[in-house]
Length: 569
Image 1 (tube, rainbow, N blue to C red):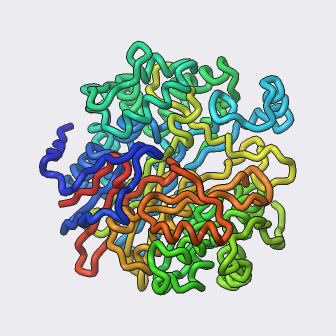
Image 2 (cartoon, rainbow, N blue to C red; image 1 turned 90 degrees about the vertical axis):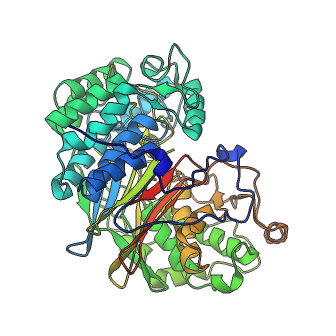
């Protein structure tokens, strides 16, 4: 199979690798960067070589889904600090022919053989009461590979062998590790190197790669070759599945070959809210996507355009709306197979009106309990692609925390996710651990339509920042009139509290973190209103986006806080 890689010198992107998380922040209100515009196709990912691979697939007639899978495979090699086939995947696909959106939930489940009582006993042995972020216990079944093949079966045009060939080539021949990824690779190795497989597969004699170092991963190349030839079954049954299961059970884990063999993705219907004439689409739980819709519904009652970007009212309203949405997130969001999630009630405009009344114009809320709705019980990468026919893919994929659990199965070249940490250990909680259950998920792709037509595909990476980031991108575009690149470059707002999806009601008021660029007058006013402001923070996320113009041309944007690139032809 032959393929060509577009030279980076010809890429249509201004590339900037700024601050590493908290250490490097935006110095201006927002950068004066131009959008990337191309007539036929566009790709935006968090690594320039992955973007070039996606474009090469599109040039050869591949569907946007083919390009997205090729880019995701490359990112699993080149950015193992955020993604890989040991993790999960979610996607929204715009099918240009039918004019419809399709949602895919490719998240994995907890092991069938591990009950809540047995999990508690295992935690007690380690003197723990909650699931830890690393090691064998937070590992759930990896869903990304099944997600690739589900997407490909429905929309793909190129053979999977051709789609995976560029990533296999780079895995064997090597690629230069980019700036931000090298930084996070080093930090992850420092904390995970004691787990079996990390030293052997993700370091050279205990040393992680440095910026610009040529890195190979022949183990991952061999695994990708198995997938290219044997399809999804080559991952979930047979030698690969046995290696994963044997490795975990040998090291205190519980995922079995049966768990892997029984895994399946789920096609779901995206849900939306209309925000000032634009329909914003997210995936339903077990993701947190509807939190962005809840925030936007509440914000719609405020005149953000009149208040202006960076004003005290802008930040105050956004933070308070986030508190209200996250209070519901902590109580209701979970796997809908195990718990009835009142999605329609949560994203209802009338419900947003009632919640909006709790926001005081001059005072921050310290205590925000969720509503009592009637129920019937029953690190990350984002990329987006668009092809010449108008098809678009919004795809997000993750190990969860950086390099995930730190559990790297023998000779396979990837690390298993730690998504199971998101389960609650509180009986009766919607997200309480159960065998075969999917945990609450933070990763969410997004899409915007206007008058029934595709308008923008976008995502913001980074845990709890994601729904906050989605709502900020939307208001930057619609209320503040920014272009696609400015909407991502603008300084961000991040709110957090001790309240987590696995916890209870928010009673501490939380902390507001602001990237540099907000006026001092805004900071003073926020403090006067009772907001607790934090210092530097590394959770502002990463962003990629593609927008369709009325004439059919594409606009692309890429995150200025990471190594990413948007490019088209």
